[in-house]
Image 1 (cartoon, rainbow, N blue to C red):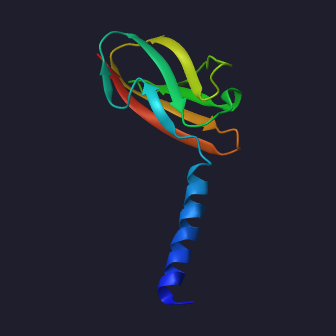
Image 2 (cartoon, rainbow, N blue to C red; image 1 turned 45 degrees about the vertical axis):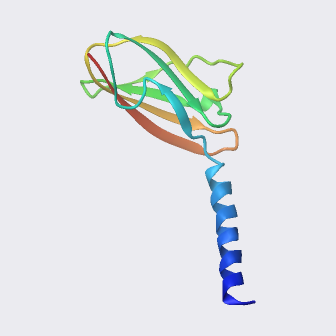
Length: 120
């Protein structure tokens, strides 16, 4: 096998492995509030949409407020949409917040992240 053919086979195998690993995780595709968004008003809807089905019952949402205290949010399960998490509308004081999420994809992989936003 010549060198160019070996390189091509290696790149093909690497691409297949990478794509299978990437598709194994639930990736956040949309959020309310959006990352780094500044919201006017104190009523904040919380909704996250992922690229794959997630186990809503085993996923978590946590909100850290301006006082750096974190509280777990109650997730509103929507059986008609298996790729979304929602916590309803929160009444928040002005300040900087972090919305932390952890989801379990139906294939068993856990994904975590956080969304910073502000309320004024």
